[in-house]
View (spheres, rainbow, N blue to C red):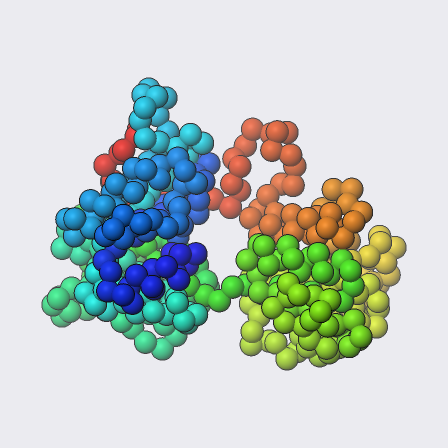
Length: 392
């Protein structure tokens, strides 16, 4: 729901009822990831998307129905070649969508979740999407130091489950993960859904991941633009104040004048496994102190610009300062994929493509060159509790 948070907050603040349809499970070549959402208010206004168009009409009607009945529903959409008019996914994947009606003030967890997302406060919202009918749609929201809402009007009957849900949600929040969790009614983990279990969809809302671009060169401006396009919060850092200016980098969220390694040292509490570092300085006096630190941190991606000769020299210098071969192997250098790029914009596409492939597990081969799955980061198909099929 994060991409439509502003509209949901506006509806919620005005007291307007609405329904949210969230993707809670995908398999195959499904078009959207878990967490993608479409919302419809009581007047019929719609925002967001769950499929890029394939099943939007059917999901819209489910939202209208949920507003009218006040009942949540879990629906599965798949591909059907038996009925050309069936509602389904043309891509051949399977999409599980949970539709939940929302009345402002009726559920403390939903209220807290919407407020936190709108304010930028990290929060995980756990909702029951399958299990006992009395719990369907029940929610708990957790932040770093608080829990909101309850799964039942009689908390004493679900206390162990609520403690387990809060613990699972907080762990997923810390990791920035969104996905399903299956627990027994006693709060213990379950291997599969069935009687005596509940399936929860946990959505983690965390600040945008960071991209730090070191080196205020012309290529950095293009990398900054594409970093923003990919959803990163982008910082440009360079020790030279004449180059590191907001005027030269209008697309950056911030421009910092500092030595790269010193700035990285100051950011240790603001970087995590999603953080991307693009080192574009290709100057040893900047690169080596920076990479000596960066390659020992649990960052998502570290790439450095330069020729192959520059890379060999850089690797030798990193060995001299004590980095192991395993640590040096984490460095993506020369940075980017081999696209034959020459201009700053083409180079930025090359860098962005490598970042996405590294994050998602892509092969970097043309899709037309193979017949395997398109979405490499999707593990085994995610099973949710027996929704009634909309299209087989």
